[in-house]
Image (tube, rainbow, N blue to C red; front, side, top):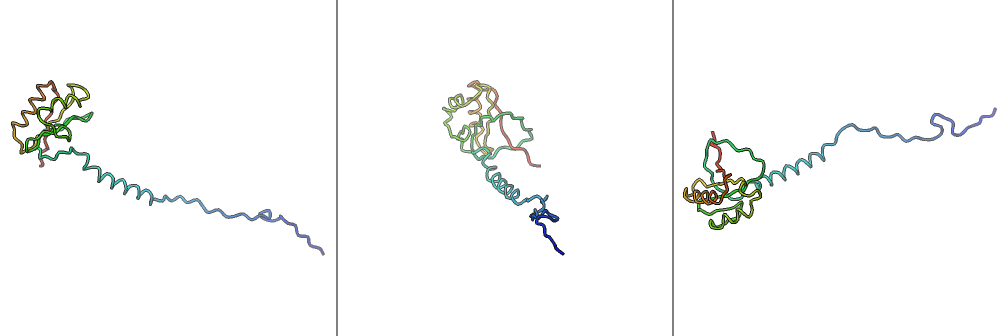
Length: 148
């Protein structure tokens, strides 16, 4: 009796198939956690830098905040009577010239006047009078809310 062996005949056609690993449906959250921690650190460092640069103690009131659409110009009078436009110290005589130069919408520019709680009332009023006399009419006084 003769037996013949045929090649390529079999279950897989004589070829070996490699088993593929199954697709995993689990989400690897390690990179997500890494990115979130980096973002947390970035925002923790950047958040204090977003406040106005001249540190003063604002008076406390019950006034409500105004809705803001664009960044206003900020004028600050500190406890020693020095005047700052944004974060740059300016002499009171040169304030209006600087204010006109940096205002984008002309005399309709919103201006926030911040006066330190311990500053001289007269110094704040001098600055306010000069701004008003120059023709700027959209002037707002800034205070801190009363803590309850």
